[in-house]
Length: 225
Ligand code: BG6
Ligand code: MG
Image 1 (cartoon, rainbow, N blue to C red):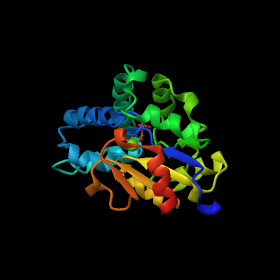
Image 2: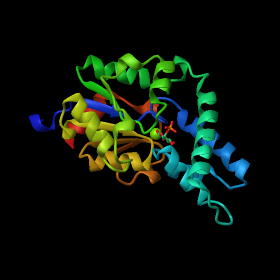
Image 3: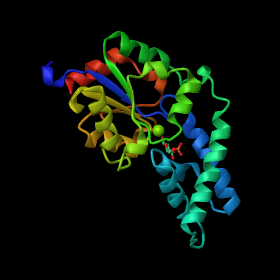
């Protein structure tokens, strides 16, 4: 293994990777879609994963049977309503809601002397991580409010690497969204996707569930890459 290519950090997306809040986001958007009479399927919801709140709303509105148009103020109100529903849903989150294998995976990374970071597009990330009781498990949590570009732009992963003081090519990124995997690859990192392999043509490795995350195996795959 060359020094330039040694593994130093694992950077995680949050929603759908650390915990199943991707489902809570879906439920909250579904409630808004129902209110507006807009068809909204789980399949279409895949496109919203990793996408900011306002951009998700814009995508949802493209599903209206007849074109809809809202003022900026109305758009803000709709996004706020979605967020209130989401915030209510995440109130019940406890440490038991960490996805399978995540606690052990992070413990293994940290005991191997590697760093950990969170690269989430969610403004609710700190609230979710606090409820999960894992704030102290991450060396860096990127503040999305300070960023200019959304996934698939690499900015959030590059910011995480810079704050962790590691080079991007020394990092693994873990994502459940196609836009997130594209952001990891654009950042020149090794991409691990969680979900259906058909959704992730650009990932280096696709695992069907977080239960399959194994640090030693991933470290070997990273080194051989
Ligand atoms: C991402 C989710 O992590 O955060 C998206 O995958 C969500 O579904 C985005 O829209 C923004 O989240 P929030 O909590 O700021 O509305
Ligand atoms: Mg996600």
